Length: 205
Image (cartoon, rainbow, N blue to C red; front, side, top):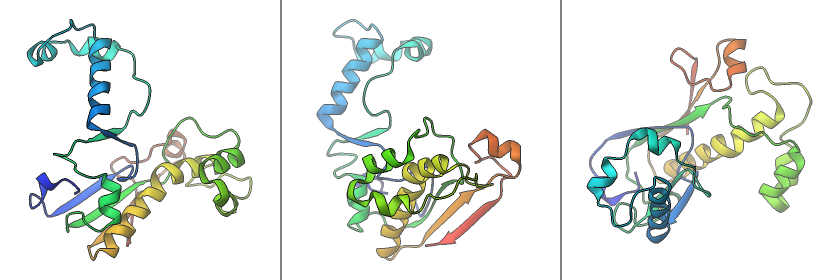
């Protein structure tokens, strides 16, 4: 929805588990450096061609160490992406198509904060007091879980979803939010609830 190369290629979009302001946006040079680090972790000889890289067994790739830094990211390379996707949506410059976007009522996102107050202060700074006022009580919510679980899902998925849909609707586009909710205690204990058959709730943004 934010790449100039895809304009006019689709009419409707469904997205799940996060929004455009999730993850990190790398410059082309940063992305290329991460690619070089990955190649080095696969023990590929210097000067190898793209053909050589395509012969690396999947098992070798899976055994390689994870790279430090963001694991969810895109490259703002000036070709596929000319601007950060969040900036495109905030400016109302995304493709004008209908968007359905959402997440699970409770996502299993580890680790949960051990000290909710400190985690909130670290994330929100001077706005931490306003955020903490939303997380009160001791009892687990039957759908959304503990306060820590609610906070983690909110800060990683739910709030970013709401922000993107608000931008999209403000630009005059159809925007809808969905939420997968658990059917049973067993599903709730499993954490992630986006499975076929789970109740699905929609809100028109």
